[in-house]
Image (cartoon, rainbow, N blue to C red):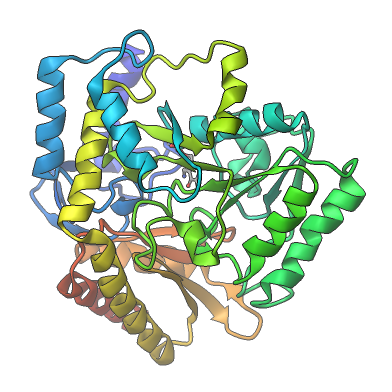
Length: 428
Ligand code: PMP
């Protein structure tokens, strides 16, 4: 292991000898970050980058937000321990604050270390509660990388050969590439068909993102979730909202992504931005559903430990204090408008979509055929990086820019980002 670490350091320090063994690094010449401050990252040479992608890991507060750093340090000085052996105020305080952000009867919180764990737990609870094994998820979804969550994930480049019995993948309500355009109810009919023709008529659960992140910032067609939830509930199943990327005020119009579709899930999962970079995830559900975990011992050593929950509580406070949801709405709407204008200028932009500070720009070489411009996507990202702007990419074809900055992003940052993208496209 030591040798591996030393080799890794050697490769990272010397870019020329770097072998791309790390499968998900964004750039051929990776950025080696050493410092972060709010919406900026700094590399070893002190070069500053505007971080328009880190928001999926670091919520609104931005990198190293002083309030969050202080909360972590304070708690570390007091006590850091496992979550499960004793009571501690930091854990309860955050659970209470988080539950207060939830609609309906979603008042019981379980903590995990990651989004994968949160979704695994949510699916297990749905199966235990309903006594049914079948789970429906959407094609193009990403829900994690353990056996169960990889099963419901439906993007071949993120799936190993896992056993996925009882998993059904429904038609994706994709307004850009889907067969039924923006007609959410027509796509939802496929959920009913899967129940009728792929199961005994009863299901355990249904898991979806409100805006697919890894899948290329794809907002589910309007009207989809109410219709699909209705079919699932008639079949006895529970509806799980995966808010790992779209939660915590990112969409601007709402605190949670599912709220834009006017539904209330039975279970909500979250991670990433919840702790501004700390490893913490959560599952929130109703007291009735939560009961299923009292039949056995459920134990997660570090899920929601005092340091992570103290940091996460500080995150929630910063979102309120700095009005970051409003900022995501105002700056996100402005940024989307600017991308839409860019689309008028460049044929290569096939679609601009998303909500708040969760935006996608899909590149195609032919607008009619929607041929993915994957090589061009990589090229423009590289050019933008050279000019000091970091964005992400995703989608099945890897041809969608993912713009998910920390929620403290300003209009000036938005202008800089679009100007740099404009310049890179003009030089193609
Ligand atoms: N759900 C969604 C929607 C995600 O985007 C991810 C991570 N990309 C996960 C779950 C898994 O989260 P983690 O990497 O923390 O396990």
